[in-house]
Length: 351
Image (tube, rainbow, N blue to C red; front, side, top):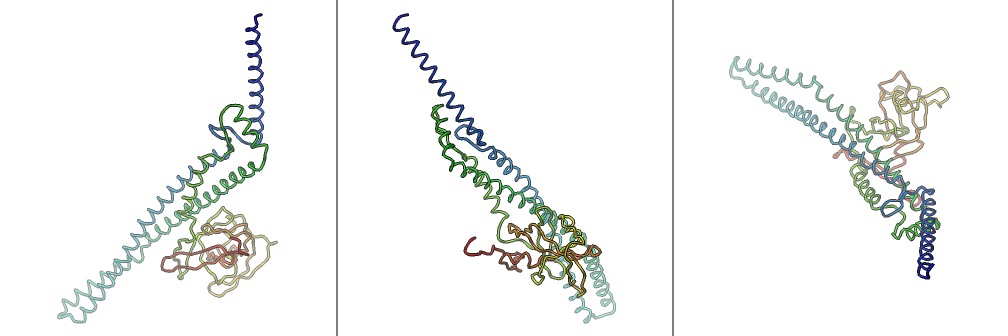
């Protein structure tokens, strides 16, 4: 074999050995990164949770559409109820005017005509007041809106938890020197620069999630006015069941009907401590004390909250949101804006 052929053969063997070494280095590095839960994308090694998070954020749009649809329904029925009240007020004003005319009626014929008009107005007013279809429909669509909003908020809170978990995993991976070396070795082996995630898509998801949170997770929670002049707010127990409750800061403890307690997995038993509860009419009944894992109003969550469950024979008992929840926060009611304004109490200078 000629000298030139020998050199070519030696060069080919060297190249083959180098490629084999590079390939082995590449495979070893990628295998280690895979074992650490990372997958190679076009420019970086990513956690698979990134893709799951993307699906989670995109799915939130459907929930937001339900809120928008429910808001439109509430606006339509609210206008119907408002128009009805305006018409009743107009009829009452007209009736007062007719009563004044009645006193000055120049003849029996005019007197009788005015009386007939007044009676007709009274009939119209009574019919409108007795017909509660519009008010019932408004109440139903408000319940639907509350349910859609609470489901959306719970979904966003869970999505934020997922996002923070992925972010923490990346932060933990950066503290492992071998991960950094594996990424560098892989980049060197393939001749292309790779890095450890998160990627641009993850950061973009974070911005989108923040925008969605800003639309609902505010410090102002919309209230609705109920019977007796009480303000009602949607309250979610244990992340499972939402119940409109009357705000009663004079009550030391959250009070809920038996049906609500059962819905959130807090059905009382004889082993639960007995507690006496005073009803609105002054009577006293025996209830049971339970502990809710979590109680949420808007974005504000209190853990391990004392609750009292009303007796089963009082299904119509008013659910009251008391101080066992509110003691964890500062709060005030904006009666003009029908809003509950809350903020988290800071302990020891820590948010």
